[in-house]
Every structure is written in structure tokens, then in C-alpha cells.
Image (tube, rainbow, N blue to C red; front, side, top):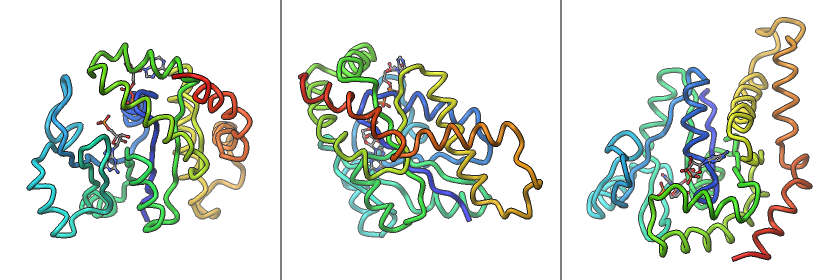
Length: 230
Ligand code: ADP
Ligand code: 5GP
């Protein structure tokens, strides 16, 4: 069975950057390229970051029940095509979904065993400066993303893991450890050598430290920075 990993984050937290790094570090992990009605941004290419489609094409896919989930985000439609999961399963690969909190809820209902990861910025000001430095959005869009972020972060407790994206390489390493730890957990014990290797023990520890219950305390100051800013 393929493991489905859901990654969500307030826009600008560094999710795309981390996911891109993860995909170069972990084998047998497919990325679900979503469909969207929003126009391409910067150097984005059709079929790579997204399938860029018209509203009519998107609606036709809804009517044909081609989406595992879909949602309206920032006034545009985004959806995960069912075929990505079928293809990952056929290839014996796991599947990574980069989707918003509404999409994550739909997947969690349909695939309760999916592993969900919420990425947070270290604080409000860092999020704001990352959005501005990215230089890809107009001021009005940045403001809308920041307003939405304030609401989105309230959903962090619906996720299995919390990843605070402070230092990029460290965060990418933690994301990789979560993915590998979940694979390790699904392996039949008889397939594993009787003793866990030092590396396996280390990655299980790293993943455990990112589990929701363990991360609660680290999240509180981040939530507070969102409440007091803007
Ligand atoms: P998202 O996909 O969550 O909207 P991006 O991956 O586009 O966010 O990242 C937003 C901006 O922040 C980008 O310019 C990216 O290079 C930068 N960034 C991402 N992670 C970090 C980090 N850990 N430290 C500093 N800058 C980062
Ligand atoms: P962006 O326009 O910045 O690429 O993405 C905006 C938001 O839409 C992000 O939170 C991203 O995770 C989310 N998103 C991207 N693809 C999908 C999808 O297929 N379904 C849902 N529900 N959200 C998506």
C-alpha cells in the first residue's frame, strides 16, 4: 500500500522549497501535480508545478469525478487528480500531496491512515518577509495570503506532525526523517533486521520530536506572534 503524505502550510512558509528538496532526497516518492485555475507565477511550467487549466476544464473534471479532493483557495480552484494515487500505487511508490487545509480535511476523511504534516514559519515577521522577498506577488495578494495564514495556522492541531521551518537544511532533514520514519513503521517487523540501526533510531527520534503532542509547546510562541502582528 502506498503511504499518502499530506503537506500543508500557510503560504510563504517555505513548503514548496522544502518539498522540492525532499523529492531529491527520498526515492519512490511521487509528487501529485495539482490542477489549478490560477495563472502560472514566475517560472512555473504547465505539468511541472501545476496543470494550469480553465474554469471550464476544471468543472468538467469535477463532473467526471476525477478529483480525490478539490477546493477554492485565494479565489482559484485547486484539485488533486485521483489518477496520481492510482499511478503511485501501480509503481509501488508513496505519494506526496501539497494541498491546503480544506483539501487535507477531505483526504483525512477518505484516507484516514494518510500522514499529515503542517509546516509553520518561525514567526509572523519571518512569514511576511519571506512572502515579500519571494517577489512573486502583488501587495494586495501578499496581504490576502497573510490574512489567510492567520486563519490557517489555527488548524495546525489537525495534523500528525508539525515542522517549524527555521533553518532550511535542518527542516528539510526533519521532513525527510518523518517520511522515512513512517515507512519504517509500516514495515513488517520480520522484514527488518532484529536491531534498528543507529540511523534508524535517530530518524525515529527526530520524527517523534515533530509529532503534534511533542511540538505543542514550540507552537505557542508562533501563534502568539500571529495574534500580536499584522
Ligand atoms: P510556500 O510554498 O510555502 O508558499 P516558498 O517555498 O515559495 O513558500 O518559500 C517562500 C520564500 O521563502 C521563498 O523565497 C524561499 O526561498 C524562502 N524560504 C523558504 N524556506 C526558507 C528558510 N528556511 N529560510 C529562509 N528562506 C526560506
Ligand atoms: P499557490 O497558489 O501558492 O501555489 O498555492 C496556494 C495554496 O493552494 C497552497 O496552500 C497549496 O498547498 C494549495 N494547493 C495546491 N494544490 C492544491 C490541491 O490540489 N488541492 C488543494 N485543496 N489545495 C491545493
